[in-house]
Image (tube, rainbow, N blue to C red; front, top):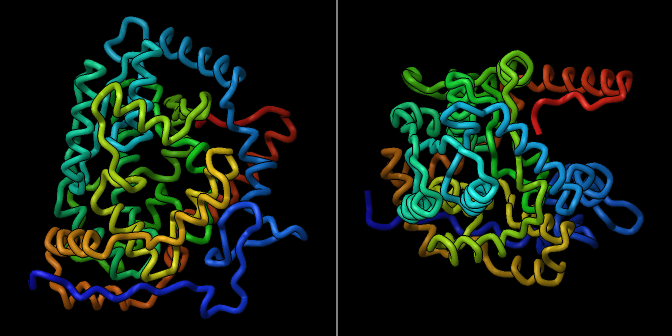
Length: 396
């Protein structure tokens, strides 16, 4: 491979070429989301959904503190006499790292698990170690069989779908949940949170839990077999694990005040943790995928939903978000280095990489999936909740 790759240039500002372009008057989501709608005041459906639905599940206040205390008390009570009372997934990112120090302060005894999909940056490894030393915990690392990851990720590139991060995301969740159940630990603590992830266009992605979809894409575009890659089925994730094995996934950051910037400052002061410069920059693949692939292939700039979330949660004003969007999503020199690493890791030549970027885009739902089962399940859940007048969910 050459020392440098001639990467395609930026797509440019869609406002310059699209007369129908429109941006929300409250946040910075725009018509790069093909399903966006606006009310008479120009406010988008994402903002309205946050106000009417999502914000009702967010408790950065005294009510959240009371709820969290009850959860922690229950976890401790059920874990009494066991070596661990919960499982904590640790990626080295800001969310899971900040959650780790909060879990320590809450007095929980987690089994700390890291799923290594082969894309950890050097800084992520250092940050994980800093957190472990601060908390005084051991780490269980599950290293994915690289040939499986490689075959799957190449298959996804050939499929031309937007959600290229599914192979590693599915691996992380599947292995974490299987590990919890196999070790008799009911509670899985996740760094997922509303404060930084409340808004995300459904048209931009598909569920990373959909094993049917993942395996269908691999059957059509993959080579060889997946020898050790474990999936989690629709039945396991939505019924068997939560209702039969009584596993619960809890997102504690939704029950406390959480600011990503404040979290980073706290991590730096207490543990020596160092920021990545990008959201989810702990993974070289995710950094490449979010800041280059999605932008160049689909025109999806993931800064927009992230900044919009910060706006609706009161962590940033709209003018500040607009100023940030005026800068490019990536540094060309930095992204070229990531692409070189990406191609070498997947054994792709420069020409193969360029050709993969020309594959006609397709949606994940062009392939078999669990989507219809999911829709049916949600309708059934809504009916039962309406009749029984109680929330039916074992996942937080």
